[in-house]
Length: 75
Image (cartoon, rainbow, N blue to C red):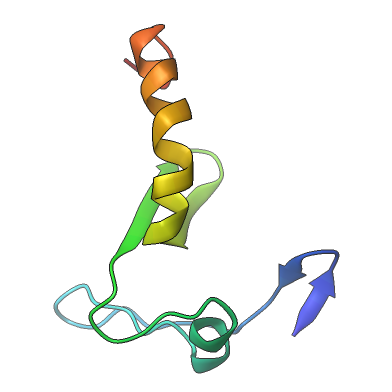
């Protein structure tokens, strides 16, 4: 369900016994995610966990690496 500009609520996901979660079908379709795809899992102690498709990493990697070299991002 769209809840704002570029923002969606896809529902809840349950964590299984092995720590696995199922990304809701509507989210997988929206972000073109398929079985076997990799996802990027990021976290922040105050904001929680984010899951993004792996292609987001390709876009973020150069900037993240530059921040680490400069001593940012917890490095």
